[in-house]
Image (cartoon, rainbow, N blue to C red):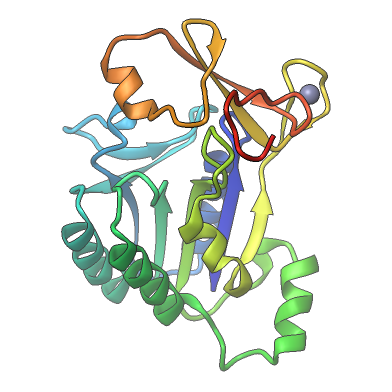
Length: 225
Ligand SMILES: [Zn+2]
């Protein structure tokens, strides 16, 4: 089964993913977390782990950046483990081909297409608590679902039809409504649509992120707004 724990920054998605992982590994089998090396801020190289802001964490292997390396290594891990938690798969900057391979691979190992009719699967997707469904491989993906400029993270959106999806929810810092987006600010100002957040952070600018609702989100120069 494939489980997607999605949301913006501070939405609790990693915490939800780790809780689910801890429940699923009680059923046995080998298990592991996967961190992309490019998710640098969260990695202690001597003790790599996936950790949430709540302090919940699991040990993890670190996979190198780069489409082929990341996808090849991930395939070995998926092949040899019963339960795998994949943290932020958008970080390794996969090429289009790398993204296609990632999606196909996760579907290959995790999608129980033979166990459920399309109708049953739809019911599962809508109603069942994530931890109540299991057998076969369990693949949990925790990820941003939208970049800071509102572009969708395509690999996780492409997996949604094959997954049980839950979205973490934070509260908008401006109006307290549910926050489905993340506001990025650079030196206190909303980041324009074309900002590359990795480049901006490396330049030493003051970058901050706040949960935001769709209405309050400010993305200057966005073609959507
Ligand atoms: Zn708002």
